[in-house]
Image (cartoon, rainbow, N blue to C red; front, side, top):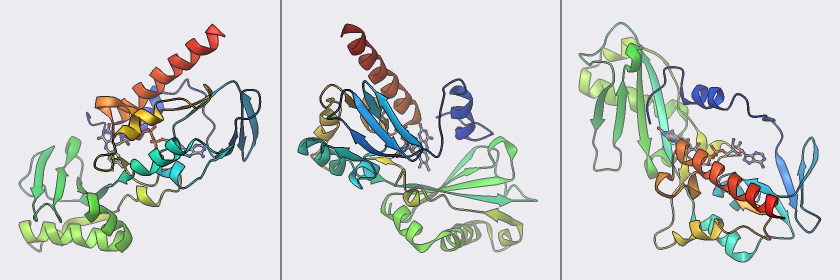
Length: 245
Ligand SMILES: Cc1cc2nc3c(=O)[nH]c(=O)nc-3n(C[C@H](O)[C@H](O)[C@H](O)COP(=O)(O)OP(=O)(O)OC[C@H]3O[C@@H](n4cnc5c(N)ncnc54)[C@H](O)[C@@H]3O)c2cc1C
């Protein structure tokens, strides 16, 4: 959870630079009544002894990947017990003033835990304030759209620092992870009383379909680091299993 000036995606890309990755190659179908598995992608079919599926539970609940034969009911139900929560970032460029704030100051504007907004202020002394909204409010904001989201942020800043702030606002945008077909939210949150869904998904299917990702990362669930550790742990399990055969 340390900050990177270039953005966290840059850190992930650098960290995994030597990992062969094919972008724009969605897996549409996973056949597992064949020797090993066959993953049908838009760019051909990949055969393997086993597959580790790291798409979010929401992507899997929407059946973006068809499993043939179908997954056991317990696994399919687990996707629905781990729906995606939402966190939305609203970065706003603020030029010509620091509003009396220091780099990395935290600013929280509370509204009964419903319309709260947190700002990370001027990180790395950049002309940037990053607003964060979460939960139901973040989903509502996504539905209202980017223009409404940016208006909300600027109005809140004006309410605190005065209407002059508007003159200092430059570029602004809103993230929309809920609208990303292959992610569909920020990170998974178990329904009350249904957290055993995580243990269910940690059970491989037929010793050849394995699941990994932030939603299966134990105490580091919901984080990028947890996603990495989950993937590595499952990969080690698969490698050991294949070596034993
Ligand atoms: C606004 C916001 C702020 C956050 N802040 C932090 C933070 O400060 N620190 C932190 O640790 N975490 C943070 N997170 C959470 C972090 O981003 C997630 O926990 C992490 O990205 C989960 O990684 P993952 O690999 O499990 O899943 P994903 O990141 O969802 O990766 C799954 C990948 O699978 C791909 N995929 C999906 N379907 C298919 C398919 N059919 N075929 C091929 N590929 C497919 C997707 O395109 C995606 O690239 C934040 C998240 C959000 C939204």
